[in-house]
Length: 69
View 1 (spheres, one colour):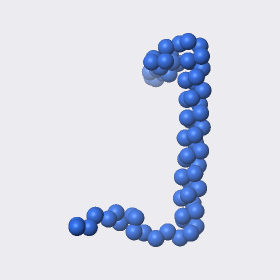
View 2 (cartoon, one colour; view 1 turned 30 degrees about the horizontal axis):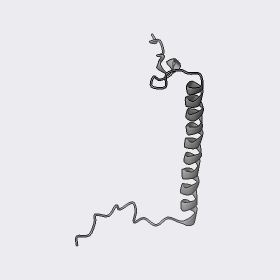
View 3 (tube, one colour; view 1 turned 90 degrees about the horizontal axis):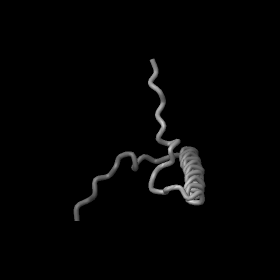
């Protein structure tokens, strides 16, 4: 059986402090994603409750900024 190619970054050993920092950063990213999912869920449920078409994105998402200059 042929050995799989190894990623050299995975071979680096991390200190406990570095591991803790990476864990905290990953945790913060997960929390932010959960907030975004909650926001999207509430928007979806509001659209569904109001009887608007769910297959079409809300109009305010499609607005473009005027060109600068």
